[in-house]
Length: 124
Length: 124
DNA sequence: TGTTTATATAAAAGATCACTTATATAAAGA
DNA sequence: TCTTTATATAAGTGATCTTTTATATAAACA
Image (cartoon, rainbow over all chains, first blue to last red; front, side, top):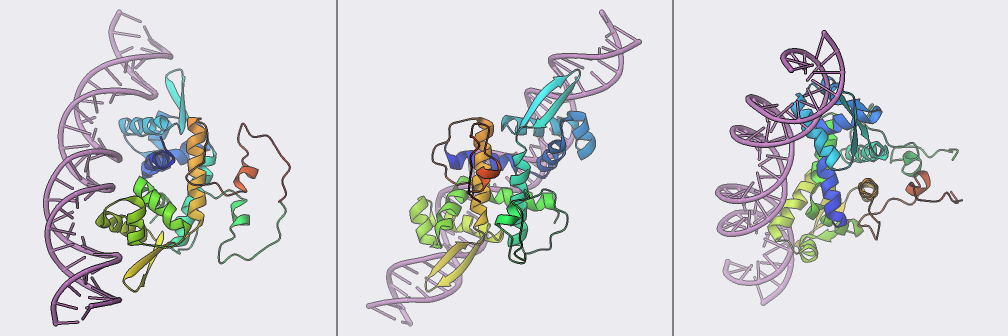
């Protein structure tokens, strides 16, 4: 699979509100299916469906613990990547930035301070 | 529009091979529609269709120059974000990394050297 | 072993999306 | 003004994706 196809596949996997909310929730720490159901209010089969899509894309890992199956985020950097993308999406739409759903990694704003940001001395 | 919805919208906009190739091509510098048609081999209406989607998402800007309409990428950081996401997609699928379609920004590997990467002294 | 709890899967419906074909607009040059 | 070139739009089709409903598996416990 070439880069464009792989990127498309990854983006398609992420391009769903419910899956984004699931990623955010599981990104905090590992969660069982029923925990995700409780958090999102989605039906159990729908949660399982989304979890399978995320697992097939190798973004989540699953392990059984007794009757529960715990899912965890394979790459914490994904949260950063989503934070960056969200930041870009807001920038191009020029809206005010309150508490964002995903966060840029701290060094991101050092390298790209943004148009309104003052230059500042930082310790690296 | 809340964060999750906005992010979904941005991801959906990006989640298409043809649009990714168009972004890469226009990301180099601004291009006319016919240049994109020439590069991608897609039909002109299809290119216009994709360009409109990208423009509606505020990822591209259009300006008329005589008979041509030149499109340019509004946020160069988008290329970085895609580079990061591509890198993550490859990492979780644990495949060998040749020349990637999009690149991580140079400082990315300083902060996240990767499991196989040796630690190294870098000038910041 | 039978029942309950936790999760997965399969089928089907509805919505969304990419693409094609055909046509419209808009500028430039003859 | 008429034609050509560059781009946009609109309608229609097929494919894909989200969601629901119903059912299956698998572990735990009585």
